[in-house]
Length: 411
Ligand SMILES: *[C@@H]1O[C@H](CO)[C@@H](O)[C@H](O)[C@H]1NC(C)=O
Ligand SMILES: *[C@@H]1O[C@H](CO)[C@@H](O)[C@H](O)[C@H]1NC(C)=O
Ligand SMILES: *[C@@H]1O[C@H](CO)[C@@H](O)[C@H](O)[C@H]1NC(C)=O
Ligand SMILES: *[C@@H]1O[C@H](CO)[C@@H](O)[C@H](O)[C@H]1NC(C)=O
Ligand SMILES: *[C@@H]1O[C@H](CO)[C@@H](O)[C@H](O)[C@H]1NC(C)=O
Ligand SMILES: *[C@@H]1O[C@H](CO)[C@@H](O)[C@H](O)[C@H]1NC(C)=O
Ligand SMILES: *[C@@H]1O[C@H](CO)[C@@H](O)[C@H](O)[C@H]1NC(C)=O
Image (cartoon, rainbow, N blue to C red; front, side, top):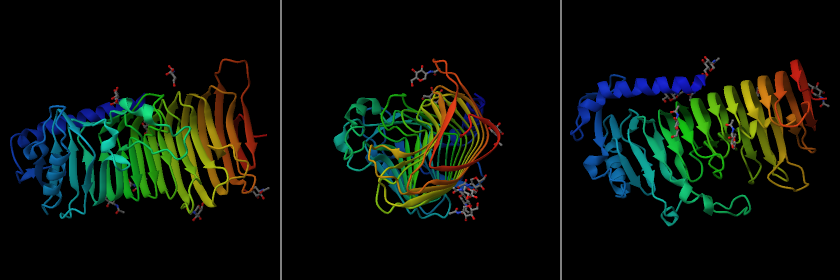
């Protein structure tokens, strides 16, 4: 609840700042120079409506968006692309750099950007792609509407391993030194955000929403990226709120409110050959409400070898969470061959709240490469399920040390 309040306050602060400054000056101006942005730098505004975009909820604005981007990105001056208020429909678009100015390019979404629903238009894995950009600021208080509800029925990934995933809403690929904030995404067809091959990315004050039963609508999936922070955000969706996949290093998740959803996960790991290791993950000061899992590490059975190490889950509140603390190394398969993803140095500290199942701590580590250096300190969970049960912990193939409160304790 506290997080929700702080997002609202920040949102209002941004809106009033836009209303006082930039917005009043841009209206009706085309590529006008000499405008002053919040940091005091001069920026040139590139408004998509000046390149033919129409907020009529039926024109496909992809071409106008790309033209505006090219004008801004190739201008060589500090530039801001603006999508003003209104609903702008668009099929898939690629916003590609590198851009010519050394200043970050600002992509300001004030209105609603709405996806087309005809899946035959989506030839690659996403709807909106930002790639090869050094210095992107994506903000503006607007929303990306993925129109997922029309196509979720075509997602058969739960039964078909070779399934063709639906497109993610926003993908960042080979983007660095960038800041994503004050945007919303709802009803993504697949992931809301996919961050891959990125470096030094801050994502904060975002609001990602989809129904609890929407398939694979992960909030933010991170892979092959270094130094990504996700903070002060609200994510309620049908799959993991945040999933931290292979090759992720130095990832911070803090002040994230998650629910509904499948919780905050490291993984799934070990699905593909030659996966890169995962290390330096900190999840702190988060609240999970009514999620199927709390904090989870998941790896496939019968995997190729890799490692997940130096992972901290700290100061976490579980509110009616089904499986609060989970390591599952037999994820997604009934194969008997053990996982070869080695998990080590995992700390759980000050995790409190309520569990709706009786096994609140479940470590199912690999028999071949047992979990090492798992530390449980101040775990205080209470059972609030339907049955008359006491909480238990199940800790298999894990070397666990513990301190402080242990509710429940690993045997
Ligand atoms: C934890 O989050 C709350 C808001 O949810 C914030 O007020 C507090 O400062 C945060 N604490 C830390 C240590 O980040
Ligand atoms: C987040 O988005 C959802 C749906 O778009 C909306 O109902 C909710 O009020 C938003 N929350 C915040 C904190 O902006
Ligand atoms: C990370 O990116 C931010 C811009 O979002 C930039 O100000 C900062 O200098 C970058 N940090 C490093 C270490 O490059
Ligand atoms: C992430 O947060 C840490 C700790 O506050 C900070 O040192 C680091 O610079 C941040 N990185 C990014 C990409 O924002
Ligand atoms: C918890 O989530 C389920 C579906 O995931 C929903 O039916 C139920 O109303 C939610 N309960 C609360 C208290 O939000
Ligand atoms: C893991 O943490 C240890 C210290 O706790 C450190 O020495 C080591 O370099 C870290 N390894 C990685 C890959 O982050
Ligand atoms: C368990 O870990 C401790 C230190 O973390 C170590 O001293 C001990 O040898 C380990 N035990 C096994 C069975 O691996």
